[in-house]
Image 1: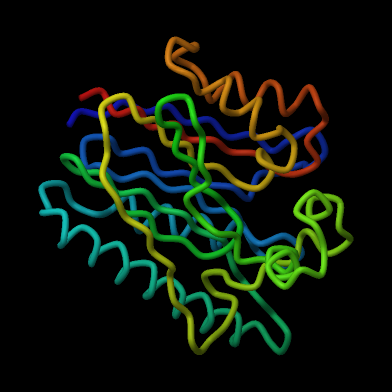
Image 2: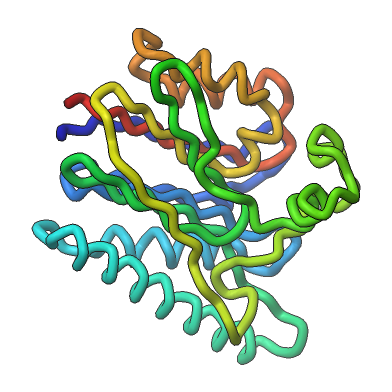
Length: 239
């Protein structure tokens, strides 16, 4: 299976600096989006450390070794961020969401913590393959609010898991599955999925769309005055 990818990031229509980072390594079969946790100190430090360590993974690793390397490097970054936060003083948190896509041959694995997302467009149907680690997602699952109420909820920005957020018990969720020729994956920070409806994102991803699909998405999010940093990484399986 061959892959082609595109990636775009922007500080958004309101923010003055960008705490999002991405990794785009089609030769290795590795892509990622990290979003420095809003409201915490030095979110750009956390997302930058994640991107730097993933960019440093050597090429040529077998799929199982690559998966283990990603886990180990993110785990080590989590520990380093917790230690740095402790040095800076009480109540300091230096954290970031992370979502990683590994694709080799005809299979993918996705690892994540936080509310950055991965979508899969297959045969015209787009599915969110990650589950948000967020307060509103928990409220939806408990039946306390309806799914359509989540985006506008006053606590919509509260995440329940992130790299660097909790010293004990940190783990990455994982989902895996087959890849079919023509599949298109989208990794994005919450700035995108909270600004553009899933139906419009799916239309932009559809086969035959502009090759610079991530530029198109970011431009449309900016036109709607996205109030957060916004990042998109698109990965197409060419067969």
